[in-house]
Image (cartoon, rainbow, N blue to C red; front, side, top):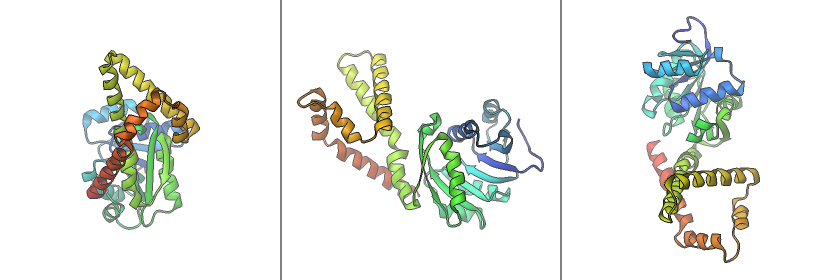
Length: 268
């Protein structure tokens, strides 16, 4: 269904139909907690609206914000203030922003009084339902507002409540973290190829390695113990780990997280 809603008030509007907005919509529908008839997505690009209509039958797809009770701001950072103001003008009394680097105070100023604002930092594994998100409530957001935000983000992964001051650190660890993991994957594939592996085989093996290791960690926890369990004295793993420790892998990751955190603070 595309186009307008007339005088009908939509429960939740997704403002922005890009990859993350679409991932959230898909998770919300699949969770069963949201009815398609009470959802809408706003997208300015005609071609993308056509794609979204095909992806989400029964959900209203439109280029303007319909009358609504709440909205998710899934737009680029420079568009957040405008989207917040437009959503509030359309009747939204709850806003969830997933834009990086835009503080709660900025969103609240744009939305005006009597609008509860929740700021979120998701990460890209939400695209496959394995996201890690952190939320912080604004000056008028209560527990119900935070629970509402959790119901949206929980459909695509796990959610933690943090003070806004810690969202930059979360960005440095979990927001940027997938790129760190992908870099490790690249490095392991390159190392395997250098030792004579076919590139396709190397990628297949490394991909399964990371999937298996992360699944084991998720099931058992305690990464230090898991590492020790793999490491026999004077064995192959011990030899490899000794090189990583000697070259300061831990301090490299600490520096990377710090740099990403500081950059997040600058953007905010």
